[in-house]
Length: 413
Image (cartoon, rainbow, N blue to C red):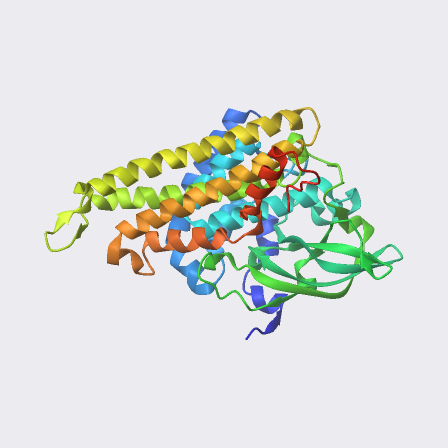
């Protein structure tokens, strides 16, 4: 049974304000220099992320030491517009970076992309007055939330009164701001808009309901707002608002803007699982003959096949991103076909990742089932991530409908 707690009770003793006061480093403008800088940052946080894996799961949220390490290196701000102090990496580089973080620690990588995407959305699309409030005094905020429009709003002078309950606020325990999707009710019916509000974390109530089988360390609790006033300068219409700040990245649209997040997570976790069984295979023995499993032809075949499948999935994601990126460079949103291909590639990467992790786990035998083992964590986390709506297999249906020439195809259907 869930219990309602206030934000302050739920996030203590995390001092997010003090962390944000420290700020993040400046980033080079040259892409290759930026890439080297961020890859080096990932190497620096690796020991902390690896050491915190069990603590994350035990506490059902990201360990504070991991949150601090990620924030200080700018790895929670990867998408934030340059004019607001972020590195604003392009989708292809972002795919590589999040892949690497999720390889090290899936919960930490998941939080990094949620925080980065949430903060970037505020910075790029919220009206200037709202951005000035969130990014006050040049600070780099940490945001999380849920874009799904579970809230309902009544228009009032200067804004809306919003009520709702939203699931999966990943990374909220170390955030200062929260996003929430809502629809505007007119004449007793929700309108077509998909609005997104931003509010201070202390204004919401959280439900202590993150008791799950995978991604335990992400702290993805439900949260509630009741008759909450949202001013017009603290919200925007997600599908129709053109970016107010930032460069080509913010023309990616839906679902393109979050494709590299979920694809990179899947690819990183599966790659870790495959590497883990490959490392164990030379010494791990099973059965009465006590021979290393690396000598089994079946394992050799499956490791080779999984390697190729992962490389193919990564190449498909890069192809879809690079194709869509050409639109963004012209200041255009990728068309419907590209959006369908982007989401389809993301789903395909997740499907492949689930198969690879399951294969590695099966060969891991009894050793793989203990809670402190990498293979069981990969198995749990990738299957939990596969339940996200973004990687729902309906994406294949939508792409198929488009290929068959059907009308009214929705990339987010």
